[in-house]
Each structure stands twice: as structure tokens, then as C-alpha cells.
Length: 129
Image (tube, rainbow, N blue to C red; front, side):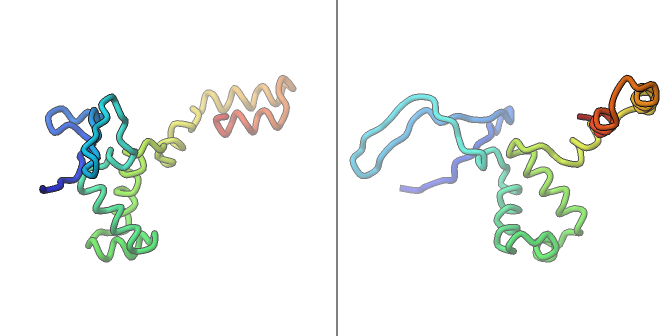
């Protein structure tokens, strides 16, 4: 019997699929229910190929880029896409979200100058925490 790779995304709408039946080929027993797929099933075939190449190159973005014929920035973007698909936060986007506005920065520094907050509190606020 032919075996196919499990896809984790619906080919129609792109939403995450779930497993509803498991089968043991040895004893022919089956288990039915709702089972979540692993994180890696969230990846597209292209993303999975990228991950395999990245691992094969022992985590070297430079070497993975050479093998894939991609520039370093493209490899970094692909890795960020994979991390996002796996549910991890993109550090670049997260850092951009933490940037405070010039008005907020002035307000924090004014409170510090007026003694309404401590230097430690101001530093935390300026870092977006």
C-alpha cells in the first residue's frame, strides 16, 4: 500500500487540519477522535524542505543559502517565515511592536524628571516593558 506524507493545511482554505482516525497496520486496530497534528505539520512543503536543508547544514544560514541558491537576507526571511508558521514570534516584528512613539518617550522622560517614576521604571518603560 502506498504511503503519503501527511499535510497539515487544508488545500482548499489553508486552515489547519486535524487527525480524526489512527490505524495500526500490525493488529488492524483503530482509534478515532480529534487529534492535533504536530507543529511541523503546519509547514508547507517548501518550508519543510528549507528546514531539512538548514538542519543538514548544521544550522548555518550561509551554507543553507549556498545550497539553496539564495542570498543571506532571503534565507533569514525564510527562517523567520518558518518560525512564524511554527507559532514562534518573529523577533524583528516583536521588536518593531515594542517601539514606543516619540510622545510616549517624552512623557516617560518628563515623569522621570518630575520624580514621578524611578530611573529603573523609566528604563523598563522605554524598552516597552
